[in-house]
Length: 88
Image (cartoon, rainbow, N blue to C red; front, side, top):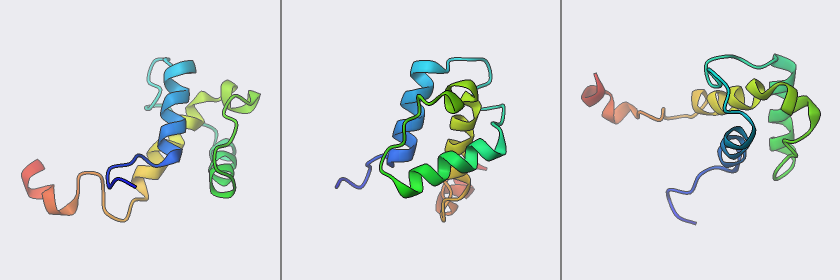
């Protein structure tokens, strides 16, 4: 694949948020921890989980939180170490 392909977890989560979750501070507020873990597990164990399940619709912030978690756990940050000087 292309070197710039978007990981499935980000694709699914952002599409879902754009469709269902244009709410104030969607990426600012955290979801319920157990829901985030559940969602993460579903992405780890199957290709694309069903984000329209009630649990995710009712706690849309857990979907945004999973996106943030993904970026936090990257081995090299999004604003890479190599570019850090330029950013600061």
